[in-house]
Amino acid sequence: MSDHELHVVEGTNHVTPHHFKSAFHEFDSSKFGMWLFLVTEILIFGGLFVAFIIFQGLYPAAFKAAHLELNRTMGAINTVVLLTSSLTMALAVGYAQRSEKQKTTLMLLITLACAAIFMVVKYFEYTHKFHLGIFPAGFYTYQGITEPEAPIFFSLYFMMTGLHGIHVLIGMILIGWVIFRNNRGDFNKNYFTPVELVGLFWHLVDLIWIFLFPLLYLIG
Amino acid sequence: MGHSENHEHHEHHLTPIPVLVKTFIALIFLTVITVGVSYIELGNMAFLAAMFIASIKCGLVMMIFMGLRWDNLSNNVAIFSAFVFVLIFIFLTAADLWFREDITPVAVVNTQVMEDKGDPNILRNKTDDLIAQGKVIYEQQCTICHGSGGLGDGPGAAALNPKPRNFVEGKWQRGGSPTRMFESISNGFAKMPGFKDALTTEQRYAVVHYVRTFNDNNPDDTEADLKAAGLLGGGKKEKKTPAIPIAMALENMAEPDNVILPAHSALTPQGRGAKLYNAYCAQCHGGQGQGAQVSALGVNPRAAITTRTFKGSGASWVGNQSTFVSIVSKGLPGKSKPGLGGFTKGEWTDLYAYARSLAR
Image 1 (cartoon, each protein chain N blue to C red):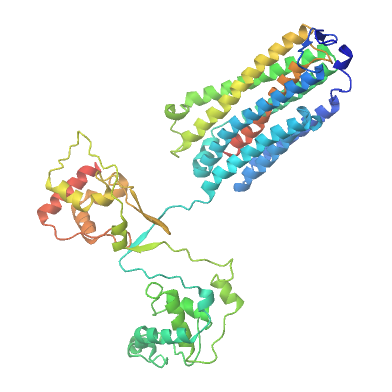
Image 2: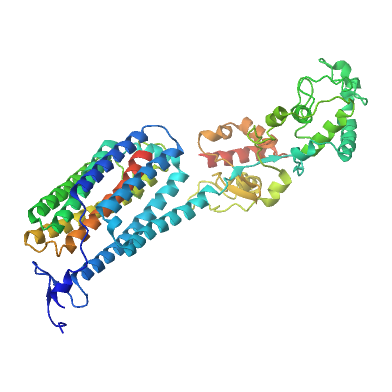
């Protein structure tokens, strides 16, 4: 029997825990766990989307006026930046699967750079709003929109983009961790689970933005 | 057993690099489209269009970038169930918004409102009952001008120019079909008054059918007549403000809520003006003249009485005593503000002063 034998994945230091039948079984289980986590993420944002849609339906005029305060160009740039990062993330996973360590690192670095660009653009958008007195909820002092319900739009805007921004930051930390481990030589075609899972998380961040951008910036 | 088991049978799916790049190009293309479409004024369609494009993009990212297309069933089921539940969440919550009727202000009228549920599509066909009913109404309401024989020779006809219609001749200026005649009776024309408020739909159609008995050759409804009357669907539809009689309004009026006098009120609640105000005005206008109270009067039709605040530009009538007295004593007919009378000059002055202090 080989029950007590360590199942080291070929070419890596990774040991497949004994409760898994095989490395693939471990990979499959980890990924299923990740997908379940992503389900909860979608439900969290789903609640915010519902709130937005309801208030938009109640106060269409205020939302229309308020959404014009958002910078469409910056939003569009951030969309392209995130889509690019999604491509490089998918490429990083693809190269990791092909044991191309250097290309994997390069792609992950580009992804990280895109995430940073996204946050910088977001920073400029937020500070511009703060400068005008556009804050969430009771801190709102902006006088430029006459509709009394406009602050509701901005509360939702800050809540939705803020929560999304937190996800971007967490994604950056995770990508940095994966870069570090990839450089250390932890991954090859037989074991790349962390790259794959961080990739899934990162694509979800992109997915959320795909809905946030038209909803907040384009329709209002 | 052992190592060899680790990577037998199962091979990770390798997505070709060009497929990833092409997917990216498609995503950028869709982004350009969605931004472009947003500059076109589409109204409600804008939301659907944007969400449709976003869903395609979402599908591409999930299927290709996240590899769901080649992934196992459980992962697919898990993630799609999330979207299904979000859609259920959106639909059930939004349904409350879509299907809830607005609260519309109600007109309070001085007369008992008659139940008017007459269906024109039934009533426009003559029956003996309608003709008999019409005869009674005709003799009360119409003979004074049109004459009891329908010859346009009633006692009032002499003073009228143009002369009242002679129904026996059967010449019609506005169409002689039932729905056209109904329209004329409802809204009146030239010297003839409209009877929309005086007679119910059924009563007006009854008169129509009686008048038609004066001449055998009156035309029937054509499709165009029905369409103009909105009886075929797609035509104009009369939207009526729900109306209720004053008595019913007062009966149903809810107690004003949140009538709390501030602790440091400059007003003296013991004064005569305040007493008059609280006795006659506060029920609708609120203890502080804040107005905007919605007193629900009923749910079918959904109706409510709204009063405006005294404060600000909307209540300039509070700024002048003679205007104030005139409006308060006469009321605002049709706007559910009843008139108040019988105050002495001193009482008017006090009430006015109190209302002014609330308006400030």
